Image (tube, rainbow, N blue to C red; front, side, top):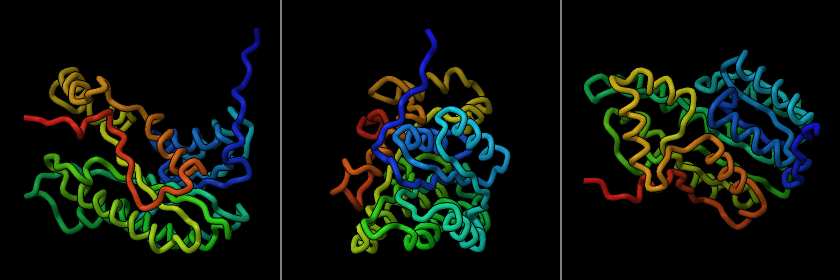
Length: 265
């Protein structure tokens, strides 16, 4: 029997979703989930080849419209240019997912002003500027912005000061944007993932002294018995962006398999 393609949902039918950091990992999974639920996609990434390949794969799998744009979100001028290109592609934006981010693992003594500013520029300033630039493209009926933060926003880990500060700031930005944009009926929420198996995680794991032991250790940290996968985050984002969360704004949803509720000695 010939395998049929999965049917598109109508949940986001007629809506345009912009997803940053969409070439791989969590961002790509979010884009695929929104597409599966009917959204038209505009993928954004600084990796030209990666984002083009992701867009082509999604067009082939579902047959729906997917555009890809290249931008370095650390540069404010590129964010302005990106917003103009989005406007040229779509009549409106209904969903914005600020997922793009970088992580630098540095002990206190090795943090420089440049390294700190680099992380903050991508992880915190870019979501602010892109939300600001695209807010006017949302329809009168509103829409949703979902920011991808982290459990680092509320829990301390070694060698993570710049990343943690950026992600804590992103939760604060989420609350304040929710207040600022409420009159436009734009809801703003955040998702705070824990350990998620992505290409970046795999790369980090390979660099460990004992990858097998580290993999086992990080699995054991989670009461649900496993690390997360990108689809876990994507489902949470799709909920917050949907009408099912129509009265939810200014909050953050922790998606970490119970990691942060466990008391550690």
